[in-house]
Image (cartoon, rainbow, N blue to C red; front, side, top):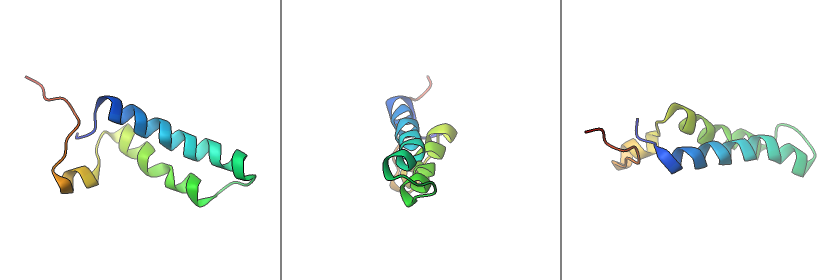
Length: 64
């Protein structure tokens, strides 16, 4: 796990907005923006981001 806290909440929110909001704004289902919303949604739900791993980043708090 390398995604935590506010980062996770923002990823889930952005993913849901892109998936649910794009068809209503653009008037059709299956837009590229809606598909792109799956990436932040899944990384938020799974609490892991491959890009963070490659860059050596971690926003998940360390347990003592």
